[in-house]
Length: 56
Image 1 (tube, rainbow, N blue to C red):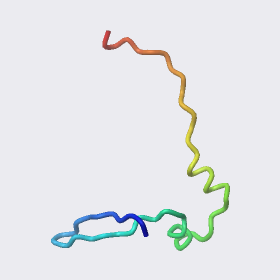
Image 2: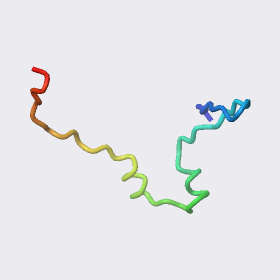
Image 3: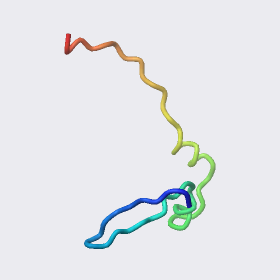
Image 4: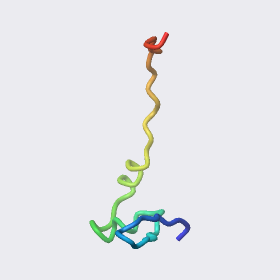
């Protein structure tokens, strides 16, 4: 565990580990395949759009 999330619940301060893999999901839905992992981490390419002149 390298990172934690800090949150407040009433008067309590709660530290929760931040998962850095898919093991938490496997406990809920079962094993995921490599295609799922690739699709979930895939970043779309940046769209080429014309400049807007709203503020000129």
